Length: 339
Image (cartoon, rainbow, N blue to C red; front, side, top):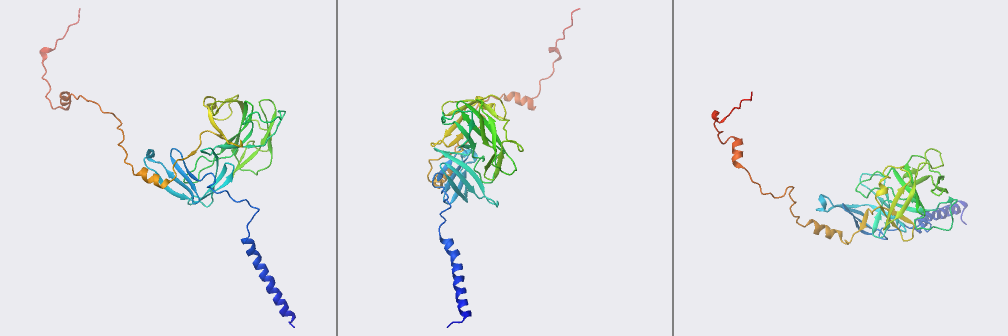
């Protein structure tokens, strides 16, 4: 019969083996609770371009090709490590830049063949005193800003210090300014009055990436400084007519229509032109080699060709190559004044 010490040693070995195997099983088992990240190939995969750059998304990361020198040369800057996550046309690009410890987040929206950095998403909001028969227009409701980047570049860029949100109801609108602030985010609603006299409610704080925005100073809960007016839709563009000029640059909205794009499901609204459009190029390496191998025509001269008639005799006289005519006093006539 085994002694008590031997039996205790055997039990200890069994417990140690079980405890060591448990973490291994936990590491190899899939995590079904966490949703998988959406790969870039879902909607962003491929080549996008604008007037000054190409941006290509692939499993390897994010590749940026510049178009300097008036587009005569396409400069490949290499691939940056980047991942993409999102769904329903809304994505967040997480890029790592050389020399930066922290990664940068770039929210984007894809609608049709355009990639937008300035976009808004529809959120649920309430308005007391207004009819609840449902939205009359696809734009009706509160649109909260979802992007705060100015571009996709080779370096980390400063994020926007202020963004705007819109509230549409029929032919009237409200434009609300959010600005960056260092504060503790709280679930507080801000109240404001619509053009029809009803009361609307919007979030006081808005967080995009690592930046926190607010629409009211201090501990207030009533939104007072915002823009109200009317708008019309004309050929895929919004023409705003503000009642009061509150924000810088608002007056320009009266004269210049703002293009807009609404997603198919009506959950995303983008104002302005897209930052990038999907390119017809499928093999960027081949296109770069062909483009850079072209021989450029000579630049047009600043001044056009002119038939110039030089008066060389006058030039010689000015230069002193020709002796001046002798002075003849008899050729001079001095007229006497009348008495």
